[in-house]
Amino acid sequence: MPTPTPRDAIVAYLDELLEPAAFNDYGPNGLQVPGREEVRTVVTGVSANRALIETAVAVEADLILVHHGLFWSKQAQAIDHLMAGRLRPLFLADVSLVAYHLPLDAHPEVGNNALLADALELTDRHAFAPHGGRDLGVAGTLPGDGLDPEAFAALVGEFCQPPVAFLHGPQRVRTVGIVSGGAADDVHLAAALGLDAFITGEPAERSQGAAEEEGIHFLAAGHHATERFGVRRLGDLLAHRFGVEHRFVDIDNPV
Image (cartoon, rainbow, N blue to C red):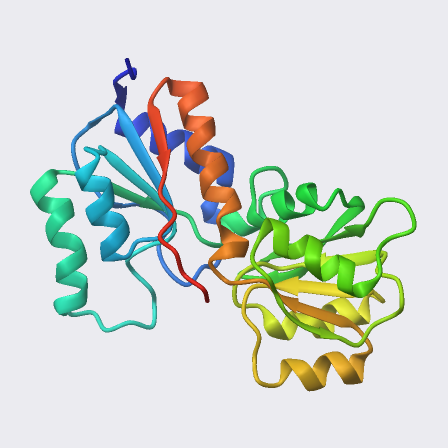
């Protein structure tokens, strides 16, 4: 049986782990919607869209933990029909919603970029690509003699999704930079560091030209797909630390 845990103890643990106050983010981190004060079941997912929320309510979640929350600094302040459709099931079922954005990209152990670097077995790592006052990206070296570009793109596709790839770098990929999500223009930072390849989530129209002119391999492996890692790991940590039940819900998104 899951162990009942105070919601505020879970949020306090996540705040201490991720240090959201250190980031100038695009929206609020931490508890965004307070529901019941006791948590037995946590559902994690990438984005707080209606499909995720309704799925979490259906499995009787007490708390939803996401990477992309409900509130962003550039959105209208009024609650429109889309926001109402997301808030209504949370209120009716008394479910809490917690979100961590840039802090979950940047964390050196449970962050999206660090976990993809783990999957690729990168060594000699260092941070790069400042956003919101902190470096978010991870750069490192592939094991052995590296990979040819096509094999590297296939490997990235195994962990994320088959990437949009502009392969204009060297014949062997040895050094790699990762900034998950929508960081296409950070390819220039990766090139300035002399990296062979750069991985992000979404391409921009200008990405093909940038890759060719910078002489670097550019891979866009899905905004959603490159940001599944961190929130899922957080849910597993909560299950281990507090004894709550954790369910990761992957609402398919090809972008």
